[in-house]
Image: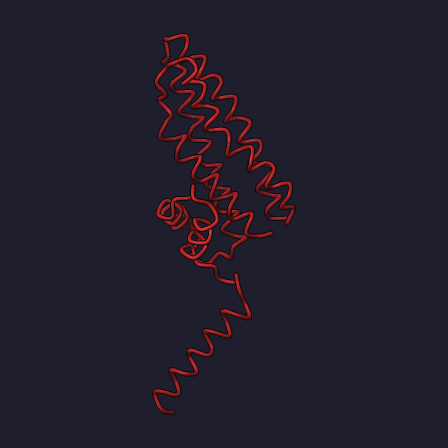
Amino acid sequence: MRPSTICILLAVAVLVHHHLLPGVEASVEAACRDAANSSPNIKFDFCVAALSSYPGSRSADTKGLAVIAASLTKDKASSVVVKVKSLLAKASDKKTKQCLESCENVYEDVLSDLDTSIPAIKEGRLGDAKTYLSTAVDAPSTCEEGFEELQVPSPLTKEDSDLTQICIITLAFTNMLG
């Protein structure tokens, strides 16, 4: 077989695979690009970096990436709760303590919402998943607003920003499912 024939056959095979089996092997980059195109709040580089580090993400389909993103969101929320508890143990300022306690409550609710949304994604109950994920998206700003209202500097700004980003990504992936 001539080299040009082989190239044509390979090109046809790739096109057929891409058009007949869409989403079977959604690359992290393609999914993050689609998510970033669907929302101006999604940072493409953040999305790729966060998902690429997770085992199995390279071979996951869109549903798998939504579950992975939700798991990353839960991991991040859990680490924020640990940090909040550590800060609470050291806090002496009454206003800071009040804000941290409020954030702790908000993040405990997020963890509960994520415990519900992850199985909902897996089971195709996308309406339920979107409802709980939408609530989770608002949690970091709720936490930050408490610090702003009491005019106390937030020790959680970076964590809240990252959590917001991964929540938005998770919701975008879930929206891509239908």
